[in-house]
Length: 189
Length: 228
Image (cartoon, rainbow over all chains, first blue to last red; front, side):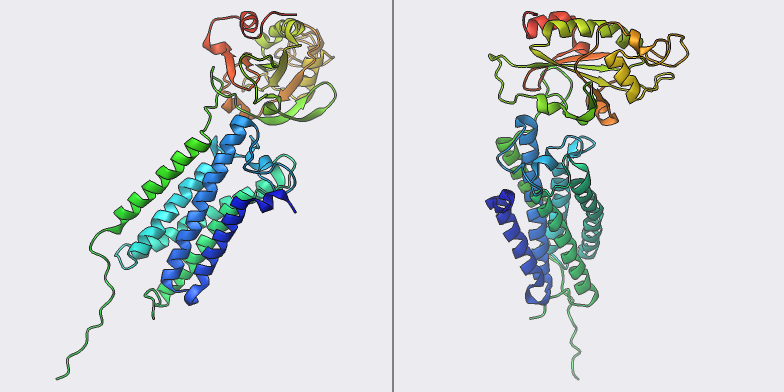
């Protein structure tokens, strides 16, 4: 089995994604569970983005890192370590991930703390559009991994965790919007 | 008379939780930044002395064919200042730039003196100047001193098309000639050519031509040591 896939940190991220998914479907898509799920997805997204940023810094300064495999198809050494594709206008992708997920956490946390506030409906819309805005970047990064980086195709597992987090986040917001439109915004017992 | 029950729509909290969310997010971001700085602080990357040289991956010609070349593959990340190691001389040229044309001889001379201790890398750029169009064939001819163009100042050849590349001053340059991309030029802040920089074996910029008046020969002597 690929060494990268047995990494305990990666397994923790995958477990976190599983828990987030569980919260999404728990109690028949109740609003509270969905809000917790969105927070969890965004939380895993920001932590995994931070982790890729740490790997990026290690690769730049040391040329290699024990934090991530550089062998095989599933690895991040050739993806995060590729000087041509590991940044956007000189800014590492991990930084973009941290900023984007920070925004999503802020929106979801505000909704979680007071879903009945006057601004709640707008914040739900902002969450939806902010999440959707990230999807083209996920597509772009997957294309880069599969076709552009040195020795492509490669799949960077920690990057994939961040991508799945964003997709999961968008899904939870979709169900939240459904709840709001169908009069299920207030959880029934 | 029965009193009509007023259905109460859920009301939001009196305090603005967005401030609490903002503070919570601030705390999370602070914790992340502290963690990043402790575990893997970001390096200062750039062409200035003391900065880590901007890495790049591009196609390069080393006398036979064009292959992928990555600058950081030449770095020795374990290098210590009190150790021997292979230094790196980076030269940015435009095959049509007259100063680069004459610097061909200087580079040959430097290579004959320091090739055992220094890896030479030339990066060929194409400046946005009229008459500075070049292609891979011209880069190969400039490096190898082979027949390309004429000496008739007809725009055909090296040195702004004034010369046949076979007449470039100096000897054949037996080192890698990499093809610049716009990303490399911007990372290295290249606005003109020629440009020279000496990198330590671990990839940090030790000497930048634009940052001091020391000649390249003196800088090589001071940093790398006695010539062969």
